[in-house]
Image (cartoon, rainbow, N blue to C red; front, side, top):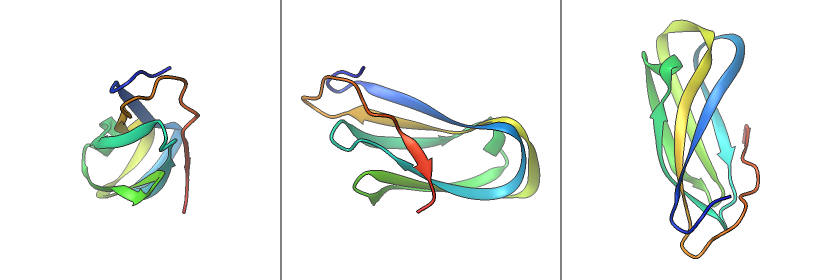
Length: 100
């Protein structure tokens, strides 16, 4: 449940041992309830360059990253901060990731 103007932190994680040097994803959200504020690196991306577009679509943000060294681990890729829209009080529908 979210309330008017409240910040919500969403942790994006890799759940199994995965090897990667870079990647990207699209995070879809309920744009009637939320607006994206920022994206920060998680522990797994500490040695990478990250870029993101908070206005990728009216209901989606795009996050990309690249590094020189391979990462083989599980854990947090990044953290996305949303703010609930003014006047919105209620449950937020589930967020989902995907490729666009």
